Each structure stands twice: as C-alpha cells, then as structure tokens.
Image 1 (cartoon, rainbow, N blue to C red):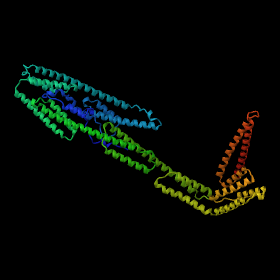
Image 2 (cartoon, rainbow, N blue to C red):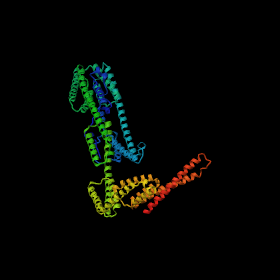
Image 3 (tube, rainbow, N blue to C red):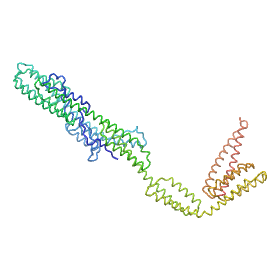
Image 4 (tube, helix red, strand yellow):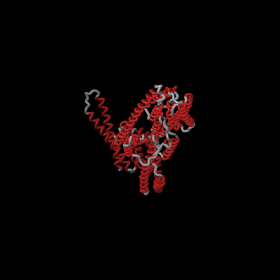
Length: 640
C-alpha cells in the first residue's frame, strides 16, 4: 500500500527572515526604526539596512522543504541522486541553489532510511534483538557526504568572498564619510566642495553592502556627516529647496505605497515589499526640516502595522499547525491501537480495512503541521498503515494455502468413505466412519465454492453405509435384545442366591455356574451394555464378600468379562496385551530390585528385622501381581 501525505501538496510556505529564528515583531522594529538624513533626532535608533534585505527573505524561503507529494517522473535511486549532486557540485557556488541541495539530501536519506528500516526488520526476523542492530556501511552514502562537503566548501568560499567584499565596501564608505566630515568642518570652503560632496554621495550609494554589524553605525555616521555639511553649506537656497522638494515627493510616494500594503491580503508579499520600500527610503536624500519628523512618523507607523499583521499571521499559523499536529498524533495513536494479530476472519479484516481507510481520509482533511514534526508524523502513520496491509496480505495468502490443504484433506476423507461404504464388516466399518466424521469436524473451512460439494459427497457415502448397516443388522438387534433379557434373568438369579440356605460350597457352585452362563451369553445392545454390566458386577461383588472369595478372583472375573465385551476386535486386544506386558516388565524389574536389596540386609543390622519383613511382603505382593498378569495375558492369547 502506498500512502501519500496530501497535506503537503499544492501549498507554498513563505518563511520569515532568518528561517524563523527571529520573530516578526523583532524584525519590524529593526525596519521601522531606520533613519534618514533629515531626522537627526532619531539617528540613535537606526538599524542596519542589511538585516532586512530581500535576498535573505528569499534565501529563508528557499529552505522550505520540497513537498513530499510531488510525483517523480521516474523512480529515484541513490546512484541517480549522487550523480545529480556531483553535477551540481561542479557548478560555480553562485549557481548552486540551496533548495536543490536540500531536496537531493532529503530524497537520498529517505531512501537510505528505508533501506536501514528493512535491514533492521530482516535482522529482527532472523531472531536478533533490535537494539543490537548496526546499519551496514553504504559506499553511496560516503560519496554523497563527500559531495555535500564539496558543495558546503564552495558555499563557504563564496560567503568568505562576499564578506571580504563587504569589508572592502565598508572601508571605502568609511573613507567617504571621513572626507565629507572633513569638508563639512571647513566652513570657509563649504561652497567650493558642493559638487565634490554630491559626487561622494553618489559614490557612497553605488558601493555595495557592508557587514551587517557595522552597517547601522556607518549609516548614522554618513547621515551625520551629510547633515552637518548641508547645515554649514552656504549655497543657493533655491537649489537646496529644490532637492528637499524632490526628496519629499519621493518619500511621500513611498508612504502612499506603504498605505496600500496595509490592505494587501497576502501578508508575506506585503512584508517583502516593505523591505524594498525601506531600502529605497534610505537612498533618498533629506527633506525640509519642518516636515522631516512628520513624514518619517507616518512611514514608521505604517511599517509597524504591516509588521504586526505579519507577526499575527505567523502566530495564527503556528497555532493552526499545533492543532494539526495534535490531530495527526491522535490518528497515529488510533491506528496503532488496532490489534491486527487478533483478526482471524475475512469479515474482521474487511471491517478493519474500512477503519484504516477512514483514518487515511481523516488524515487528508488535516492541514500540515510544523516543518519539524510533519514528516515524522507522516512516516509514523504510513508505517502503521503499511504494517496493517502487509499483515492483511499475509493473512489472505495463508488462508488461501490453508483452505487448499483443508480441501485436500476433506477430499481424501470422501475417497476413504466411498471406498468403505460397501463394507459388510459392520462394526469395524462403523467405527471407521465415526472416526472419519470426528476427523472431518477437526478440519477447518474450505473455499465457499467447494464447501457444499465436498460435504454432500462425504455425507452421501456415510448415509449409504449406515443405511445398508441398518438393513443388515436388524436381526442382530433382536438377538442382542434377547441376550439382554437373558443377562437380566441371570442377575435376578444371582440376587436370589442365599448362602445361608444353600451352604457356602453349594452357593459358590451356583455363583460359578451363573457366571459361566453369563460368559456364554452374547452381546447386548450397545446403549444397555454398561448398565447391565454394572448391575451384574455389583451383585457378584456382594456375593463374593458374603462367600469370602478373594478379590483377585473377582478382578480376574471382571477382566475376563471385559475381554469378552471387546469381542474379536484384534486391534483393541493387541493394545490391551501390550499394556499388560508393560505392567508385567515393570513389576518384574521392581521384584528384582527388592530381591537384590534384601541381600544386603543382615540380622545384626539395626531395624533389619522390620525392614526385611516389609520387603518380603512387597516381594510376595509383586509375585502375586505377576501371576495375575500372566493369567490375563493367557486369556488374551486365547482370543487371538
């Protein structure tokens, strides 16, 4: 089963500055508190322009993970990813896109993690402990890491070059600031330096970025130097007023655009555009002193409003992501609580499948969680779903094999029943049919399309045999009923024996004759066999007690009756004989042990007399048992 997290698809995430490390509120203060040349009173609150550059916002956005839902044009392999990273590493550092490297890394380790998961499962299935598992070394991973290191080194070299350039820009700008400061201090020659100062301002603006930590102080120094120069400059008032008017118009245009951004629905786009407006504001010269505070206050208030909306947007999104994370966590726990191993029927598996699909539909309705937990939760949910569908496939495969084997066993019973249905050995064949019927009940189900057919086939053979048996044994049943009446008469005769009237010898003779007559009577109905025998044994035992006959003789009579009840069933006779032989060998071994132990006792030994007498009694008892067993074995041998 392949499940895709659709909550990641079709949605672009716009990240805040510095990959979310700084809050939007903090960034809004840095942006809104930048100063201009015409606002010396607030120059102490200035912040570096480089902290709010659009390039950093774009870079932070590029770090957002590529959606796991974008389908690949062809299967992705580790070797293909290594080759793609190698081609990327051969490019110039400026041409290497961070998001492309991140995507390749994510795909590679997704495949690598799946390989390790399979290796771990195989390791555990082999009977090992999961904690002892150690992943196998992967040459492709080593090569991939080496290429990542190469890319990282190139990017580091690029950053070093940028930093060096920024430091050089700082030195050039610092020299310009020092030069303007020097010119502003020369009151007598300020007029003569006007064009030179204008050229220095143009050069200052054309120079690129400087290190962020130095940007604020440098810009403040530059603004202070320019302001001091213009304050000291005694030039044509019309030219000064013209510059102020032009700068005021440009800043009012920026204020108007900032007002439009306050109504922009796309908060991320509005925030990015605001960074551009602040960059443009810094590059515009001073405005008339009487409106300097007022126009800057308007622009700063609008910036604060946009920043508040930006921060509120991310706070709301974080709250929504937390809710989504809790909802996905609940679904994971719900699926993990399902007990797949207890499902034993097709209906149960179908019902559980509906629950799994319902959970997957619920998952699709939930938006994505935070970047940190979203992929982990999806991997956890997918693992649970994959585990279920793998168990389901294994159950259906096993059930198919089981149904096939059950069908083979039932067909074999049908063939046995059909081969035996014409037998006239009614008792033996009946026992076999009963055994086959019991075995049939122990065999599990078969495929539904074969179930009725094989059952009716078996039932037809059984019914045919028992119908023939019923027809051919009706006479036997009448004989058994007559034997039952005869045995009941014998029991009544035994009850009528009175030793006091007949005398002991005559009574014993009568009892023996009645017992012999009992033995000569044939079988009785099976349902009455136990009851009539118990009645016979009870009255015989009572007479034996009255006549003081030995229990051994009673037990032997009882044994002979049992053997007679077995009849001509050779299998049962052989099993009984084997049981007696095992008992005989056991008693014989015990007898030999006692006789050996008796040889070690002497009359002088302490308590020797008592122990010797006890052993003699046990030896005699064992000898009597051996004699009884020999007699019983002879009785069985006479039947075989």
